[in-house]
Image 1: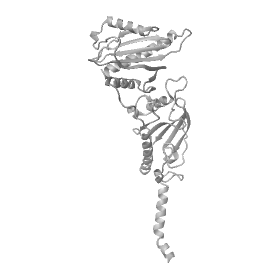
Image 2: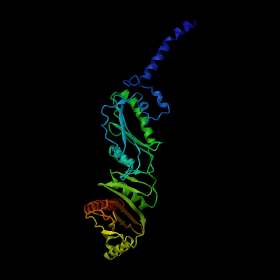
Image 3: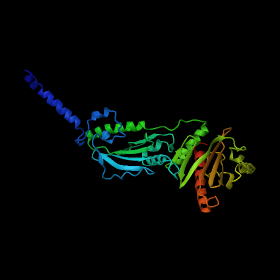
Image 4: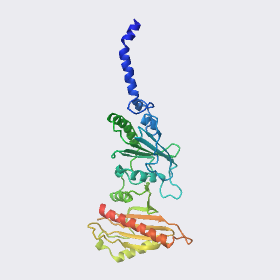
Length: 367
């Protein structure tokens, strides 16, 4: 009787076993080493376990150097591939932080590299934030999808990882791959950290936005009270930024600006910086010929030891505060403690260009 009962149930049993076998080996072409899709419910970090993400044993890619480099002080590992080389992962490790002789941290260099290689990064902050412990960029706008992520590890080291996926041409396989890729996208989104919330008066927020916009694709880094970036080989940093009252009244209207006022302001600055060599005394910035808006803007540039400094003073309308922005760069010093003439002249041109660009952006965007 028992034998007859087993015989009667043989058909459904065989059907169930076949269905399980088909589920385990899906998708087509995944290979015998593939794990079942149900393993997605296991608590595995797909951002650190490439095999769990791919659901098959990955291999070293044949063209592992094809996707560029994270730059800086990172040590890379061979790229790994899966899904008939449609899914690839590259990874770098490094100490992070500010390396000797560097202007900004290795993380800031990575952030600029990641933004430049990702068209969809237009909405992310331009400068790396020193408070970030992880960050990611997700780009699904192109035929080849891309995710890049960075995180600080428990041992203090940093890890950078890049994934690229070219979807399969087979509809069923593509759907299965999309499910796996979506798990990675969701995990990468968890690594994102937003910039600091807006704070302070409107002019202060505009000034921070101005620095972000001015950075563009270049390498830059900002902290709670710091901001530095690279420009034509120079390391520039902001050492005085904010709002306040000037040493004397500066008019907003260009027509109200007087030579006597500017001369008196220069006297006050010279008293504050008695050791300075003034390359550009306090003066009114020329108004662009095509400018249809904005008020007076003032600037000065001077050398203190081997430090080249340039500052903008921008009055605001009515009784608004004065916007102040000073940018400094340290130059290599000669035997007398000051930079040689060619080095100084080149740096002066770079700093002058940065100040003029910042002033023009303020006029066009915030004045």
